[in-house]
Image 1 (cartoon, helix red, strand yellow):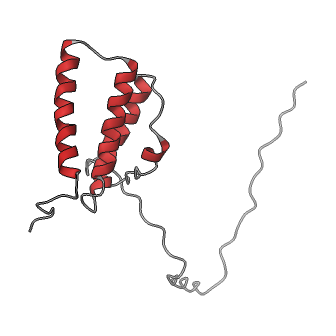
Image 2: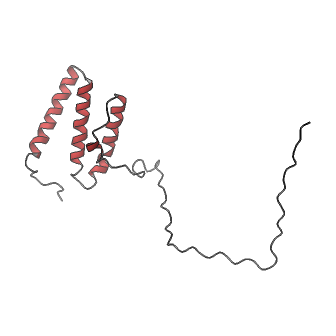
Length: 144
């Protein structure tokens, strides 16, 4: 079963090819020179926007790409860049607690719905109730 069609919407294939080509040229330029603050911010925005665009390629794509958005947000913090554009960042889903290493992730049990009947308490045993003694209060110390 093929998930993606052979032909993309008008302009999508060409723009994706141009983005891949531009990423290769960026890599070559950075290897030769280095980053500036503006260049790093622009590159992070390009990755965020591309990841956001890829979010519609599959029903679970946004969830799968959520770590990319989280990693870029962390990179922005370390580089002291402004946070992602709210329009882009608003589409990032929260990663559920159950994603990750199943040996280390603890699943929270869902709360029991209020409509579940609670079993009746066991009947009290026959006979007199056990004696209950009054709680002891500790003696009060006075200092002289």
